[in-house]
Image 1: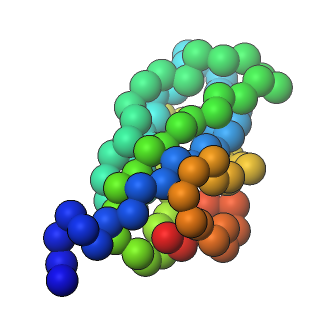
Image 2 (image 1 turned 90 degrees about the vertical axis):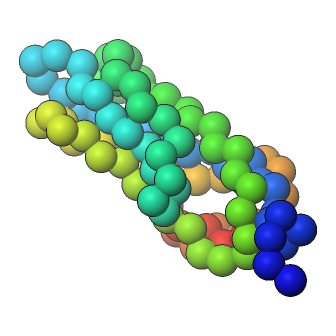
Length: 96
């Protein structure tokens, strides 16, 4: 049976670190191909942002990724689940 009943609800968190030079970069955060956030990274070097991702999706493997149109170095770290049945694969992938 496909549909809403097959979806599982989970809450994930991931830390975003960024190294930027001239002006704070804009970034987009995705889980697979679905955009979850679009914002400017305004924190200073050494600081990080913890993004919260509330996901309702069918069982499967998912990847968190970041895109930016400007020159900046982003790192995703410390992927965690605070709600739901999730297996962490690595720093950016998980299975529901």
